[in-house]
Length: 404
Ligand code: TRP
Ligand code: SF4
Image 1 (cartoon, rainbow, N blue to C red):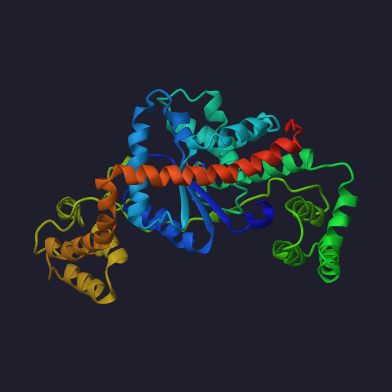
Image 2 (image 1 turned 120 degrees about the vertical axis):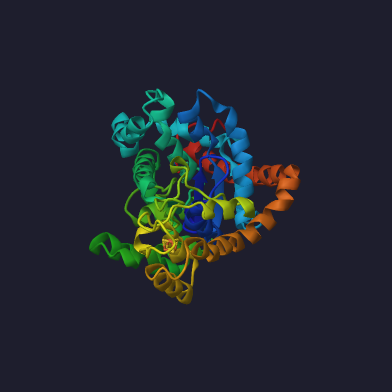
C-alpha cells in the first residue's frame, strides 16, 4: 500500500498519561470513535514520546499504557475497526526516525514552538537532550511510516504536522529522483489505458499550468481508482502530477480535533494538572461526591441568597449535559433562590453517571481479563508492523540501502 490509500488512512497517537478523564472523552476519544468508521485508522500509545520527558522515571509508563488502552476500548474504540498498538512494538518508527534525522536541519527542530514552550513549562526537568529536541521528528516518523493522509491532533500539535510535511517534501525531493523518471512516468500513463491516460494528462496540465487544485484532486482520485498499474507506477504518477519525482512519503494533513467543551469541576478546562477531573470510568459514588462538593456561585452563601449561573461552574456542566427545560429550571430557580445548589447538581450528576454507564460496562471485560487487552495490542502491533515494513522497504530502496 502506498500513497494509493494514504488519503483514507488516519493515524494518531497519545502519550501514556494513565487513566483518561471525561475531557479526553469529549475531545479526542469521541472523535476517534467516529473516525474509525470513516477511515482506515491506526491509533497508538506513544510510549517513546513519554520517555522524552520522563526518561528519569519511566517505570509508570507501562501501567499507564494498559490503563489508557482500556479507556480507549471502554470509550468505544473498536479493535475490529481500528488498529491499536504500542509505538515501541513497531521498531520501524525508530528506523525511519533515524533515516529522517539525516536530512532534517537542526533549525527546523529548534524552531518548533513546543520545543521552547515545553522546556519553559517543565523547568524542573533537564530537557536539553537529543531525544527531546528530536521528538517532533519522531512524531513525523510515526506519521510517515504509515503514509497517513490525515492526522487528528489538537491545535498545539499542528506545528508538528507542518514540520512533517516539510520533512516529507524534502525526503521526496532528495530521494524521489530516479534515472529516467519522465520516461517511466510516460510509460506508466500508457498502462492506464487510452481514456484514463488522456484524462490524467489533461488534469495534470490544468494543475501545472493553471494551478487548478481541483484538477489535482480529480487526478489523484483517478489514480487511486486505477486497477491495472503497479504500486511503483502509481507513486511515480502521483509525483509526476506535481512535476516532481516519486512521492515516497506523502504529505499528511492535520485533522483538527474539535475542542472539548467539557469543563472541569472548578469551571476551568478539565485537565489533570488542574486537579479538576472526573475519570472516564470513575465509580458512580465518587462522581456524585465530586459533583456534590463542587464550588458554586461564591455570592450564594445561604440557601435564601439568589445566585447567578454565569458565575457557577455547575452551570457549565448543565450546558453540556442538560436539555432546555432543565436549563430553564436552573436559570429561574437559581436567580430566584427557588432551588438549592444540591438540588441543582443532581441532574448533572445523574447525567454524567448515565453517560459513563456504557463506558464502565464495556471496560469490565478488559479489567477482568488483562490477557485480552494484551492480545488486542499484540495483534494490532503486528498489523501496524506489516504496514510500516512496506514503507521502510521503499524508503531503504530509495536511499540505496536495499542490499538485494
Ligand atoms: N505528540 C502527541 C501529543 O503529545 C502525541 C503523538 C505522538 C502523536 N506521535 C503522534 C499524535 C503522531 C499524532 C500523530 O499529544
Ligand atoms: Fe450554581 Fe445551580 Fe447553585 Fe445556581 S443553583 S449557584 S447554578 S449550583
